[in-house]
Length: 258
Image 1 (cartoon, rainbow, N blue to C red):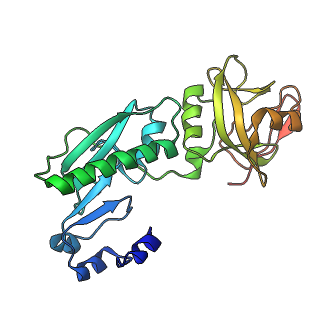
Image 2: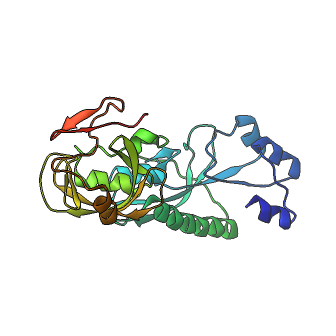
């Protein structure tokens, strides 16, 4: 984006305060991730294209948190930037359903298109007066590695939502395994245990569709299982303790660091 701006003669700066030197009439913020100081906002009005229906999911990871929570819908708000964290009034908003299998990347792309349309409409017709946010505020904290760790004790639906965020991981024989795609399967057993091409969860089973062993390329989940040849009762890590090996069905399974 900065390269395109330079090609078109648009100055590129790296702090909100630097924008004040160019005579801008309006600042537009998208996924900036930092609080803009009050002295800058006093001199330059700014609007933010935020990927949630405020005040739900203020903060850094609204798309991911909406998926993790199992929200049926989300949306985009064009809001006034204040010194607080996504607390400003809303000029315009648009709602959209979240697809049952939609990934965070796919949803973000859709919301970006929706938000761009809102922004262009506002620039064409004028912002108008913002309306105050109404309802209970929730906060979308950044996604940490532990948020992406698959806890096989959890229900299949919850595990599927973690996978949809991207970079979901588990531990197999002491090494991390990234899980890129899954599908629900039938069956019931000890959570984390492998049975054929399935892994048992807290309330059923899940089939590994695409995985990525540590240091290798993405591959078909069934092909990976054929390669590792799980023994009867062998299981993925289901513990919160990353450094303590456990024994399952006579097979010791190590844990990855961190």
